[in-house]
Length: 409
Image (cartoon, rainbow, N blue to C red):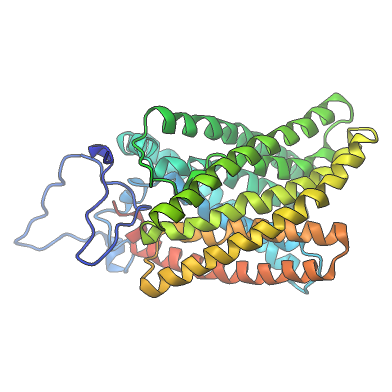
């Protein structure tokens, strides 16, 4: 079976590869040719070197897919992970505050742009939802909301004040949780009933729709002290643990499918290789959630249940951390191999950021609860790698955005 004609991707150049994260080329009327005698017309921004790959600046939103929200996830986790580190670094808190502010601005700007995309280019937007690759990234907008919301609670209070920060964090958590639960149900449903999939279709992006509830569980833990004691707080705690289980089991199933695909069908197109790092996302986030929820369990549950949940953080987290190290080594080896053969830049490179950030927060939580110095410095090493990856991908994304390459269909 092949992909539907409406969702085909451009043919690769001789010796090249198809960028599966590029916006699919949808059937639409050809653009009228620009007067050839006078040469192609250039919009004013092109003369300044901006959006040279676009016919008009408004084309920025023409092919804007949900995968763009992964840039907010990757930026926000740099700020959030900095706060969780067990070691204090001078100036890091201020830097984290700046990065959180950047992620917040990106969230507002991208939400407005994506709304314009849906209003002006509905056929393309529907095509994204019908595409077996792009549809997976509908899990990115919910996680972007949750990441910025968590940062608002951790860092935003320094600017907004305690009360405002809590209100913003709760609002973003509610929006992100509802959208995340919707993606966790809707996208697998589409995969079962409508999307054209093959035995070798599985890739790291399949985790994107089912991981948001795990992010809700981890970030919801921070809201427990700010929710009224009694049934409301108990409901929040139990809901977070339910979402923890929902995402945990679904992620295990998808990871098994990814392993199956790798061993029997190979790594696939080069542009999908970075998505192997997405597996670290649910591993690190589940460790984080187990520990943070365990810390807050006593606020809503009596002993011995609160004690059991507190113990679960280490009992669950340390073994899963071991598998996270295995997967990190495997993903790194495959990535290095692909880089040597040629790894084209695409928005999938943001997969090098958020998943690693969740390993930082998870490892930091294990270090705090166990008192392990080794785990503490391991978290610092992972954070250094996260910052390096984020800086690299952010610069490449900014350059591609200014040229217009990343917005072109």
